[in-house]
Length: 192
Image 1 (cartoon, helix red, strand yellow):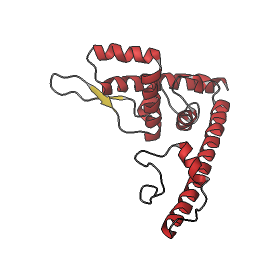
Image 2 (cartoon, helix red, strand yellow; image 1 turned 90 degrees about the vertical axis):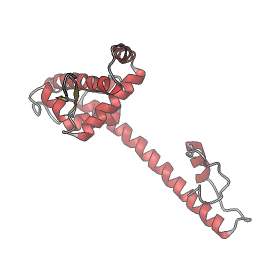
Image 3 (cartoon, helix red, strand yellow; image 1 turned 120 degrees about the vertical axis):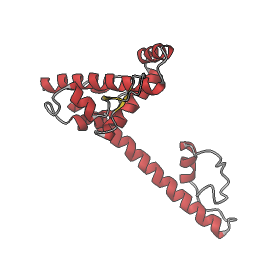
Image 4 (cartoon, helix red, strand yellow; image 1 turned 180 degrees about the vertical axis):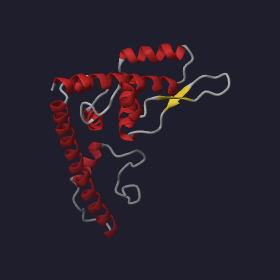
């Protein structure tokens, strides 16, 4: 809307949080045409709604973090795991005994390798079945670790030097992550 109506904003880029806060404090001006006045009012109301939704989202994340910590103490301490990804993983895991093995959990998460070889080339790809939300959470954690975790960065560099592609490296990391998460959750839920 702010791109269509001339409200005096530089809208070549997405609005920042500071700009949205400023817009939420706008009042009508005397010299505005009726279309500008209506556009300003609508922009102000939308900005207020965005700020409310942002505050609600922040509150929900903190509650989710508390719930995750209560259900699985120390689970969020792993690199790359935040309240949302840990919540998705805990919901998918559900309870001790749901999965008979690491392989079953990896298969459910879509991190189990499938043979995709052809001719003389031997390779694997990720299973596209299973819980897509869980797969998305693993993907987010792996991408985060590839950027921020030093051990994972070193692994990526080593595998890249060996000739592995980005997708192959990510597949291996997702499988490794699914195994380690399963082991950690089994340990947490057998103690409780």
